Structure formats: structure tokens, C-alpha cells
Image (cartoon, rainbow, N blue to C red; front, side):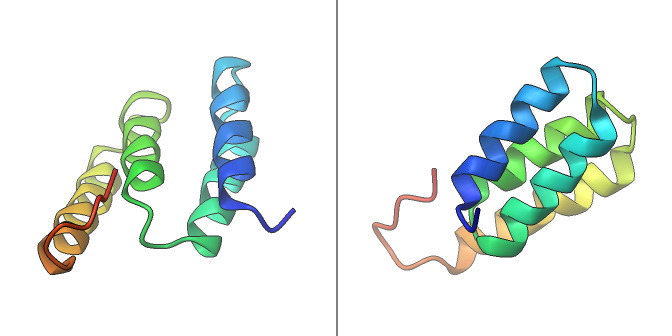
Length: 79
């Protein structure tokens, strides 16, 4: 499907099922479809830091969230 929410929720399910490789594929697909979605970006950062202990990558993703929020028009809900 071409729906980022579907890929995001499936990634979360795969994380709970201890399938990190498949989960990451779906996180990345979700972000390819919706690269400015800060909720998916934050969830991906949590995945990187906890599931795969990739703190440097998680920090870069969170920096991207901060940049997106900084440049969002006033009153935009980025959640």
C-alpha cells in the first residue's frame, strides 16, 4: 500500500513481534511516503535507539524532527 500510516503501524507490530529488519523496512517506507511526519520520525528514532542500539542515527532523526518543527508554519500541528 501507498499509505504511510499502514506501514508505520505494521512496523510497530513487527517491533513487538521481534522482527527488527522487517520493521525497519516498513518505517523507511512510511517515511519515504511521508518524510515530514514527525510522529513516524520520532517512533523510528525510538526504534533505532532501543531495538538496534543505534543512538547516533536516532539523534540524527530527532534533529530532523526539530528542523521540521522549526520551519513549520505557525499553528501547524506536527503530532
